[in-house]
Length: 358
Image (cartoon, rainbow, N blue to C red):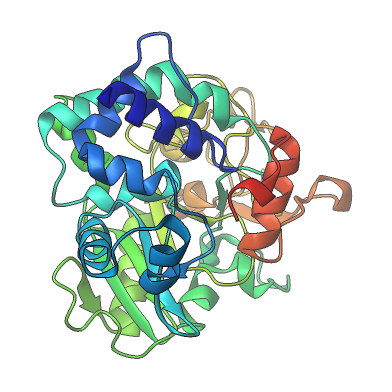
């Protein structure tokens, strides 16, 4: 009976644009069973992406208001459902598994859950990683872009930070997860950044270390110096985080490194170029590139189709021989304006009717 409850929730999550595909092994059900009680799974399977108050849910689901509100609050605390302000108070809604429920397990993730996710990633991630638009898009390191080029604010990590009023940092869940399964990543852990338009939003948040704007910019620079790739949700407005990713731990970028899915992340509008007069062929940039986009031959070869336009390699060059320039217009990715636009485009790509979950 309980397996049926988790199977219903799994189908509900897979009906979202993000996806939560089934596996032959059923590991997706064991993962949900690890996170949700049967009662929580049954309730989550009835929620929508559109936030509803406890009063509205009580009326729609025919459940008693007081115990329902208590259960909803507990599920929010455990990072199982979404919550946010709506017209008549606090609303609750269904949250995708990735990006969503899984990322909210920081602080609760243990070895068993980490191992289940590792199994699920290897068995199912390829089914949803190549669907467009991608989950994430790359944002280039600011210093890497040629100085005479105008940069759209949505493609500047520094501008994204400046556009917010509160900043914070948390440990990277992907690196925590890989360490728990015995495959630790050598990159820094405390570099995942969260953003808010509300001043002081993280001042009393026990899960987030609040930063000043200057500290946020320093964190960004520290991540880039470590060879990490800035990435954000694949839309222009309403950005709430900047991930600093690597192909050895990041659930999304591993899709490129381990599964060979070239479009697992949306490239930036920029591509690398080299000044051959300055290049010493030292290979420092090749070592930094996580996407095998650089190759040393008689000259430095740039494989433009593999280059994500992250700019990390430019920081490694001792001679300043590398810079990012705009890709040709027909190669620049179309970035959805809002998250709702992203949802609609991805739902269309998957053949999903969003009216079932909104």
